[in-house]
Image (cartoon, rainbow, N blue to C red):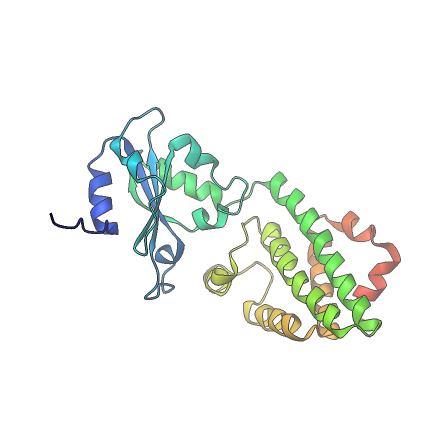
Length: 245
């Protein structure tokens, strides 16, 4: 009896395309980001089934190998995936391999790539407060002679900063792996990508208080311009420590 060959990406796409229950195939991850694949990159594939359809492909639910990871969902589940959630960015930059719905799969992906105005405003409020909190703690620790704590809080603040900046641009924040890729192709409005990445690299490594304050000045102006002044004003006198001295 011969051993069964591992299921490859190309072979599975062929099988799924021949199944009428499949209305979409969506590739995410490194394979969907031009120039980001390595020798270790697998194929992460969403298999989208028509609501109520039956298919033998469900036997592959949870399939995971070094070559191919499969997520099998209904169309309704696919619409809801990452809305909100960690998966949103992955799907925002995913690409469809099969769209049997006349462009509907592509429209679902496009919707995940753009936060609606209310959602973006709420998220920006929350991330701005979180950024200010970590920034304040870092600067306070630096002032009080706690260099390690200052650096750790500075590094924490960068995560919240990028969540904020992408929310202000009504986009889901990319994973760290794809941050430079994303900014090189889709810069944040009003920000110089090179200068921003240089600043956060130094802040993450050194907790430089002068650089943190200078960056906060830019962030404060952008946040107030977008209508988030109330979040900052709630910090009262503590803003003095965050601003350039």
